[in-house]
Image (cartoon, rainbow, N blue to C red):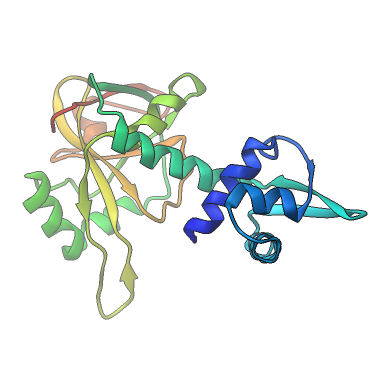
Length: 223
């Protein structure tokens, strides 16, 4: 997304458009972004087409509200700024409930394009599978804060079949015993309330876990 769209979203959020419809003119938006009315009008049209805002005409003015996608983009910007300006001061603790996922972990863990990077960058050969945790509402904020912690970047690659996206890995310790890593695909197939763990051993067998069990994950400041 263009930086100009983020600036416009930010200014609209200042007007209150993050949680309700607000009446504003292109002149109001132009003042906010420091451009002409023509530029503001073009920007709003672009953002509406991208699904970042919803608009409805009210005479000469218009009602504008930021959509869920627009709010997500603002949230991503906020997280990135926090990463720049706020250095984590303590280890992060995330508690989640074990659940059976889409059974794709073993496939992805077996791909050389990923596996070789895990070995060289994380220092262990991962068990062919992931442990999936669903984070409760009380820990959801910790899950979001995770994005401000140091991570290892796993590059995407392609083979004769298809291309595979990149991911971020956060070094972690499960139940204060087993060194592991949280894997966050850049194009995630789960929501923000899910954490996927890889480790050199089967975490399910190591801790005799079944669906519904609680697991404590610690992400250190210095990986």
